[in-house]
Structure formats: structure tokens, C-alpha cells
Image (cartoon, rainbow, N blue to C red; front, side, top):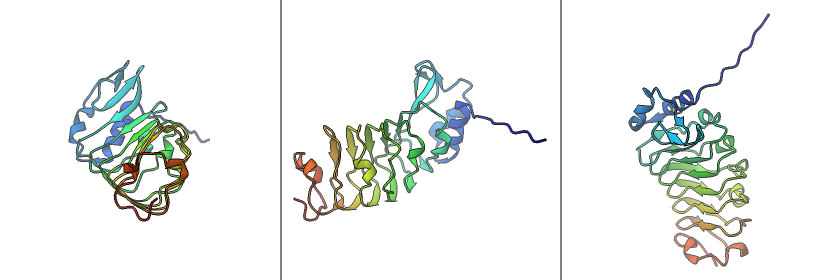
Length: 208
């Protein structure tokens, strides 16, 4: 006879597992010996944790010198996770698979060292995403079509990368966009012609 058992990590255990994937995470050392739960109502007991009704709503780990891997799997158990901000750190490597965190509303990754081509479907499961900040990394290749298809998005910042190829036809309305300082080429889609021309400034080729 065989028995199977399932074990779900507590919020504290999941956060410590996430921390274990990081390098230079001394500013999160208080997590390790904190006897309190991460959230107490809307108040966070752990550095960088955003809370609502005893539930982890997000992580705001900015300007901490963090590097290593953003372990998305360790965060997948947070069903109410809505916001991740890792801006102004030293994360490198390719973009993690944030499609595993389908409830995200805001994703801030600007000012890191992330690089490589982004898959076309990089954001296809993030239908509710409203803010996407990828500025000042080293992303290359074409802008993924899944970004252009984020129907609920109100803010997209892709400036300061090495994106190339044509600008996709963004489907959104009433949103802010920054594509400056990339290596894009071709014409500006009709859906974007009324936007401030400075969002196309920088290393563009034959844009009109």
C-alpha cells in the first residue's frame, strides 16, 4: 500500500526559499530570525513585504544590491500576489517566467542587468497586468507581441534597452509608453502616432 502526502509551505517558508535564491541579500537577513508572520492585517512584519488582510500582496525590494535568481516558483503559492518591484538592483540573466504569477497587476524590473531576447508569449498569462517597467536593462530582439496585447495595461516602460525590429501594433488605449533609446526601426504604428514623439527618441532607424 502506498501513501501520498502533500505539504504546502507557509508564507514564511516560501519567502525564505525565495531569499535563498538571491545573492547579496544581507538586507533581508531579518527575515531569517523573525518569529512573527510576514503580515499582521495590513501591516508588514517583514522588510519589503506588502500586506492586505493578513495576506502577502506584493514584494518591494528596491535598491538593495540584490542579484542572483528571481525564483518565481517560490512565489507561486501566494495566490493574492499583485505587485513585484525589484528595481535598482543587480539581477542578471534572462527574464524569469512571470506567467506563473498570473495574478500580477504591477511588475517593476527597471535598472537591473537582465538581458536576452524575450519570448513572444512572455506576458501572455498576465491578462490583468496594469504596469510593466523594464527600463534600463539589456533586453534584445523584438518587443514581444504579448506586451502589445496587454489590454488592461496603463503604463509600459521599455526604454534604455536594446530592442530591435519593428514596433508592434499596441492594442491599448489611454496608456503611457516609453520606447526611447532602443534600436527599433520602421514606421510608427498608426495607433501610436498621437503620442509624444520623445517616447521614440534615441537610437531609432527610419521611424516616421
